[in-house]
Length: 379
Image 1 (tube, rainbow, N blue to C red):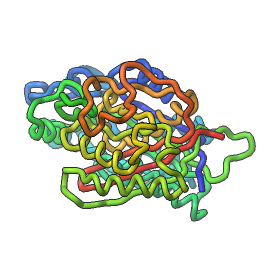
Image 2 (image 1 turned 90 degrees about the vertical axis):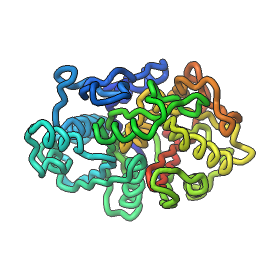
Image 3 (image 1 turned 90 degrees about the horizontal axis):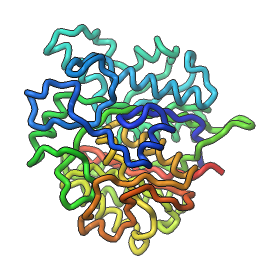
């Protein structure tokens, strides 16, 4: 089966809607900059990919994740012709890594009030758009695509005719500080698959798509989701397993009868970490075999940073634009690919133009939670 994407929405450091985001990514615009929301004296690393929506530098505010989420969902709903003020009866599935952890940090340290019920995105969504069927999933960096997988199950089972899938995460000092301490040198930018990469930097963002089982007559579709494969290899708490990743890739392709040679574009996970990039490259080479040099590949985290639970769906929104325009954003900062990726058609320098019909999206998280989606251009 396939499910039409009838609406999209996105907010990230390099764009506040899907069109702006895609245009900036194709132009190679990076959202990296010095931290604005934290006290820099507490950290050795000082760079991140933040959405610039705080009232002033150094003054963070609660509920930013919720605000970005509502923005992206509203965009997607309007785009699909839905009433963004009344989404009752429409399941909303949300993938996130840290939910409103930043708000809890501000409450605990600075005494900024934060009612416990506001930890749940459903509270704000009920107030903003009368949503009465919301569910949040925390599957680390693959959370958005895990939510997408469940949405396709709901549509295939006939449980729903329309589902909104969203993902969101913002910077938290807890996660930022953890990553800072496990990386040998504080990175200044994310450089996926580059031999001289220093590690990952967090980014902020939200993305949402509206999936429809049977589009109404005349209703536009940005593209179609053909399959989503998920697994949990439980190989290690943080280290990825190429075997588990390759299995997810093969399953996503086989679910719709595709071969590696049928894939025109791969939106890699590409975190820029020492272990993840090599593991993903090994898995791609294994799953694609002799066709590993055929699809174009790119990593938008080089410009958005790692947006965690939002990353898979940001990839989806960007992919739909790429399929529609036949244009692929470059991987910024990739100058000397690691040996494992040397044979890939990685887009570097400037955006690539090519006929595109089928794309694969990768998303992998801590604990071996792997998700891979197959998307086709609108017919």
